[in-house]
Length: 366
Image 1 (spheres, one colour):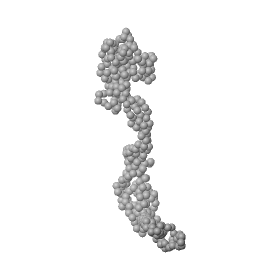
Image 2 (image 1 turned 180 degrees about the vertical axis):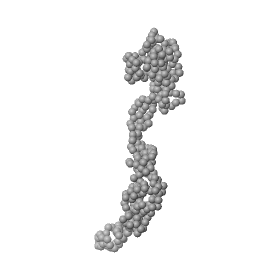
Image 3 (image 1 turned 30 degrees about the vertical axis):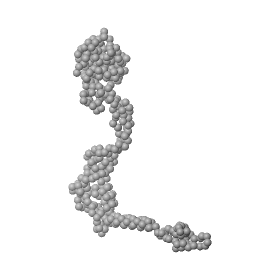
Image 4 (image 1 turned 135 degrees about the vertical axis):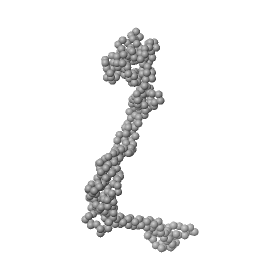
């Protein structure tokens, strides 16, 4: 037992604490004028005793629990199918290990076992040491194999239903941030600023019967990297009344020529090609007019003559944006201020209208 030694010494009516030269009931202290004996008080530190006792008690408890665990694992356990004993393993740990290995055999590859349903047809029971021959006690792996054979050869085969999961790290695309663009068609989009893809963990749950997958579904998503959303411009031209420009993905509707003229200007610089149909690789004047109207759901004739008789005729002085300007062998879309957008040899461009060449000005009304 460790003790603290404290010496009390009265001097001039006050107590002085002195350190003794050695432990004992008395200590000799040198001072002027001779020797003086002072009393040594022994003070026992009870807190240390309590700690030691607690540690010993905890150690004893651990030993007892270990002994009980060992004793439980000494006993053999019988695992039965429909009440018929199939195999024997040592201890409840052996039973648990056997079940785990058995269900792993029925779990689809690359998935993690989660739950099983075998309709309560297997059970286990602790046996007395004298009831089972030591040679009959097998490892968990061997016991699992024996149970699997018993499942498949039983008079009524066992149906093993397993639920398992697989988690993969996959690409995650954050929802873009939309900004309104009054020069694009409703539903049409253009990326203003590229985003960055993130990552997410996707968990898929599989339902299998006797090892064969019958169904699967995504049961969990966890975003581990949010990425960065792209900024996307989204059009409003031809947006139906009451529709949300952010979510609209249908066909634009024709409201007036003003919107159509705005759309036509977006293709300035597109290449020209006689008889061409492609805004990217080459287009002629007739097809350019037809395709601009087609974007708003309006079908026009496929010839100069046909366009000269489309819609209703108006005088050039009353022309509005979106009207079709028809020459003898050329057509364009009026954009106001005496100008039109048309496909010519240098490509789609804005040209000044030549009134003397006009054969007709047609207004498409829907």
